[in-house]
Length: 113
Length: 114
Image 1 (tube, each protein chain N blue to C red):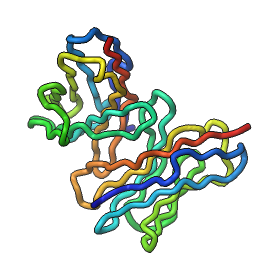
Image 2: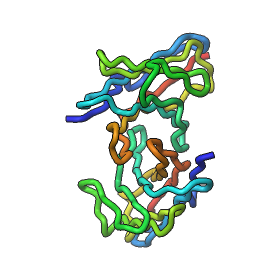
Image 3: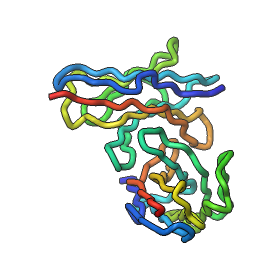
Image 4: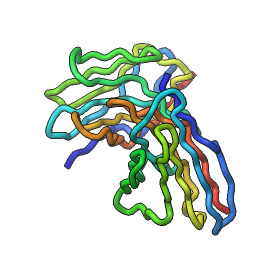
């Protein structure tokens, strides 16, 4: 149980385009989902906390207009990277929360050319 | 300030040797404690967790961790390492009673020699 999926697993896009990443909790309902960013050989950096039916809470320094988060249902949250630039290239990981635990998706590798 | 520290950036052990990865936290009260493992290009897998009770926690893949309140530590151990254990290991905490927001340590990269 407690499986979280992400789609796509990797994506390459051109600079200036937008990319949407989906995070789904497959076998449980998650009122809260989290989005992380991870640079090579570094730890996970929390970008935002997403609660179903309400606006996401962004961490300091994260541009909310650039990283649009939508949590429309108890099993789906999306992260849209708008007007992507090469510096947005990274590994994006989502997690879904149940009780005191977080279950992580497999991550999405974004490369902006 | 609240923090999680993994003092060892990189550890190398021989296959079959024992392993201990260190984790220290700085919180006002005992938080909930977790250890995760991440293989290259993959998400995180939960190895074990501590909420309360017995301070020695058993996890998956033969890992265990011991919570020591006096040392504010939650070190991860394995008696005999396998080559497949080579990965990045993250200690993480959630303040007890909080909104489940994890804070991660900086990670420890484990290399296993044949």
